[in-house]
Length: 483
Ligand SMILES: Nc1ncnc2c1ncn2[C@@H]1O[C@H](COP(=O)(O)OP(=O)(O)O)[C@@H](O)[C@H]1O
Ligand SMILES: Nc1ccn([C@@H]2O[C@H](COP(=O)(O)O)[C@@H](O)[C@H]2O)c(=O)n1
Ligand SMILES: [Mg+2]
Image (cartoon, rainbow, N blue to C red; front, side):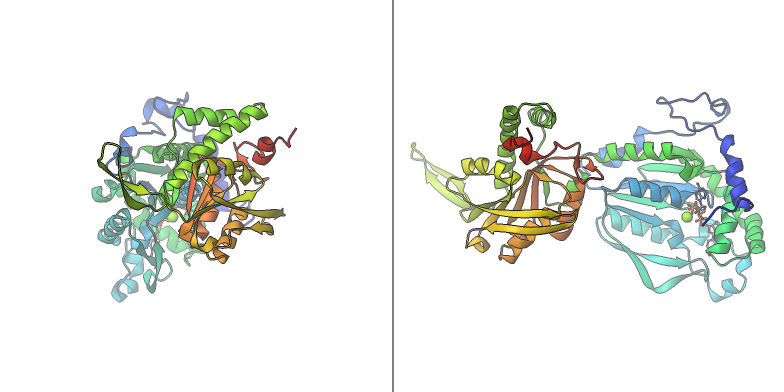
């Protein structure tokens, strides 16, 4: 909607700007703000609030973030920003509003007298139950609340599934200690009361079917007193206070960074249980450092790539089924061991996948290796050009070889072909050195039963669909065609 410079909230937004001195991080950042003398820190990150994920005994507990603040302070806006920036994680937003009790017909007749800002207006037991269920890894059907009718929808729900991060947002989520105690991080969105009132007038008249008089009346009678009685006193529980809500990009970025750190680097493995990143060591990091350097010699690039490929191949082979086998040792004793899976083949995606064939041959004597060539036709349109696969491939486990997983489009095309040839999805292991998160999402969403084994997950793809930081065109560097 275009900004109307005469609208009351536009005037208030503009007026509020200079009154805030920005953010302060205790012990990390400080601003010469005048507020530092008289008020508590505007922005505080507390380490103690991350006990759930710090506890190694509870590695799969979702990280719970509570977001509160007065009405129209920008809670939902801040949550949306966090969700957008934490795109690598499975996140669910649970709004306290969804747990408003539906009004009885008698209450509806006197709706102007109903206090929607009092803790009793919410079914907090049900909210607690919802978070409990989500924390146990099960889905939950969240009610859908209608602010126009003051009722919940009778037979419609919003299903939310198990997740890594739960964001719990609402005016009174810090009020009840049982709800507060569920949270690993507590955020208070702190926006001037006059800005909030202006926003609320606009929102409630545009979206919630109210007229200006009723909004002002409700505000004076219930909203403001409840803010003073319940919301503002809960500010003391906050780990992070965000002045100016969604306008405060610096604060939101810092929060997101902090959550990223607390969740660890390979959360994609938690999202997709079939993604395996080989355990990192300084040797592995050292080899990655070498092959990623743009000026490394071709010889060294090949040497260290081969070493890494060998590790990925060995790790991938570890995911194959085996049968038990006993042998007699030269001492005459019996050793109870296992026998390798015999029905196996490799398939390399030409050309860079061919760089992985030698490592596979070195590990699996006489292994059959097929080939697939996919032509990149625009950004998404992949075209299969050539395939040569073992005729009995449907009976084999397949190690699909491609050193870099970028968008996932060509990988999906190759996997699709293998499935068409009768290979069960669960019999495919996709091996690569470097994966982009976008590629992992793309492949795992479409083929959840397939396994991916990689040695590092990179940050992202850039606008040209290249992996960042990545290592450039692997095939050109490996086969020396970039010179
Ligand atoms: N920084 C901002 N500048 C202008 N308008 C905003 C800003 N943040 C939120 N709004 C608007 O104010 C209203 C209330 O914001 P919202 O995020 O829904 O607040 P809350 O969830 O705290 O009630 C919404 O209509 C939203 O579009
Ligand atoms: N039927 C209802 C239910 C709630 N409200 C008001 O909503 C506010 C909470 O939502 P925010 O997005 O603003 O946090 C709260 O202040 C209630 O007054 C309502 O008006 N009608
Ligand atoms: Mg909201």
